[in-house]
Every structure is written in C-alpha cells, then in structure tokens.
Length: 347
Image (cartoon, rainbow, N blue to C red; front, side, top):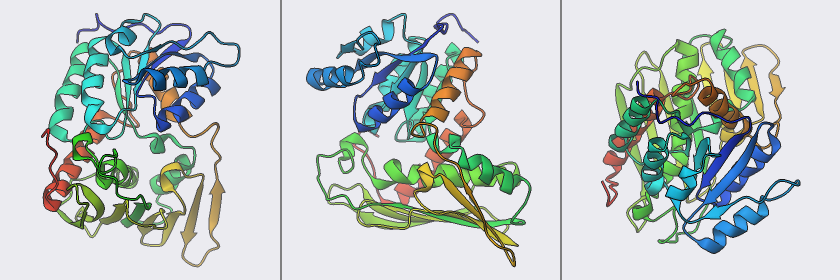
C-alpha cells in the first residue's frame, strides 16, 4: 500500500467542506462543537453562497473561514486533513476522487455515488493510496443504536424474523430540484431509501453476525414526470424466513419508524429512525423498556469523530461503516432502480 500521498493529521484536525448547502450547516455546527478540529476552508460553485457560508461559521473568536470556488486550491491547503462532501449526488464521485488523490481523508454524504460501478474504483483508489474513505451514514453512530445493538447481539427478542421501516415526506414536484432532476441523480431511493437499506444491513449484521445477500428482491413504485423514483416500495428476502420491507418517498407522509421483529418480541425506533433518540424493547408478556439517548450536539458528531479517529490511526475505512457495506447497499439500489426502470443520463 502506497501511503506517500497521505496528509498527516495536525494537532487540530482541519476540515474542508465541499458543497455549502443545508446539510453542510449541520456538519459545520458539529465541527464547531467538537474539540480538536476546525473548519479550514469552504468550497462551492457559487461565490456568494460560499462566502456567506464561510462568514456564518466564522465565530467564537476563531480566524475567518476561507472561501473558494477552486476545489484544487482547497484540497492543496496543508491545513486540510479531511474533506466533507455535500454536493448533489451526481457530483460526489468527482470530488471524492480529487480528495483521495490529494491524500485527504474523505467523508462523503450518502450515497457515496449513485451506483456500485462508480464506487468500485473509488474504493480501489482509497486502498491504493492508503487514504481514509467513508460514506456519511451518521445514523449508525447515534447513541441510541448502541442500545439497539446490545439488544440484538444478546438476542433479547429471540431469533430475528424481519424488519420494516419508512422514510417519507411530501415535497412538491420541481423538475430542476436535486430531488427530481435525473442529471443530479435525484429520486427517493438514493436520497431516503439508502437509510432504510443501510440500516437493514446493520440490523442483520448485529443479529446474525453478518448480512446475507437477498435471495429475492421485489420492488414497485411511482415515477415522477422527470423519470426518477418518487416513491419506492421494496421487499428484500434474506432467506430462512427473514424479510425486510420498506417504503420511501417524496409524495406523502409515513410514521418514519423502524421495527425489528423476533420470535419472542420486537424493537421499535418510533420516529425519524435515521436521527433517533429513543428505542423501545417489547418482550411478550413484559412491560416495554423505553430508552432515551439524546444527541450530544446534532447527531453528526459521531461520524465526524470516527473519521478523525480512524484517519489519525492510519486506517482507510471504518469498522462501523466499511467499504463493503457501501458497495453492498449500492448494489441493492442498482437492482431496485432496474426493476423500476430508472436510469440516469450519466450511467
């Protein structure tokens, strides 16, 4: 493994933000609230938007946050140790590749890229260069899921039988928006369903020790006029009677919870499971156990700490969110999109 291009961490881990949108504000808030790290630079295509973002996060007596539209210049800065990529999905791959080539640890918003074929060379590049790369699935690092993991590992609900989840909200159709534009890799599956799928994989891993590949996958849905998926219903059959069912969509509401079923009980993450602070253990014939686990800042702190810890130790991937899980989930989404007839112009 060639590690000559890796930028060694400094005493204060410096972050570059690529794509100063709404979700990047949440990331910046967490960085500001964590010790031993800072915002080193913000990069985006719109000069005014980039500068406004940088000005907003220049605070607490810290030096001004530099702003630039030049990605190469941002990545060349010696005070940048890690790069957080929060552009529309279609642009994740190019920014991730450039950051890896610059030797910077990469935390890229989910999905890492729109399809598995695009992800494979990026994972290969991270391994070749010895540079850390992780898909930003912050849900896996939330405190409440340590409790859920303990229940699954100890077999509190008995042998796993299946799970159900939903992630839906109502967003009016706007063909040029990142949600609906195929050129931006829009669609409910990549934007929302990735959470249902990555947590399906995580639950099976905790309960079984590993996640088998689905023996069958059935999908139905509704396409927007632009051709991307507006709603998805899917069932993944993992054999031995274990099934995961989920729905995601931009065209209505749902309870947005996660339910895990076992032979003698079930686990419920009742609301917004992707940023949950509560979990319930229901054992047949017993009173429910309800656990609360508040967020330390806003929920992003767990994945950020993981990047700094792993990169500082010279690792190229996280054991909590490894490359294999990113590739597997992308493969499932490829199959679902194929069944729906969704194809992006850049594929």
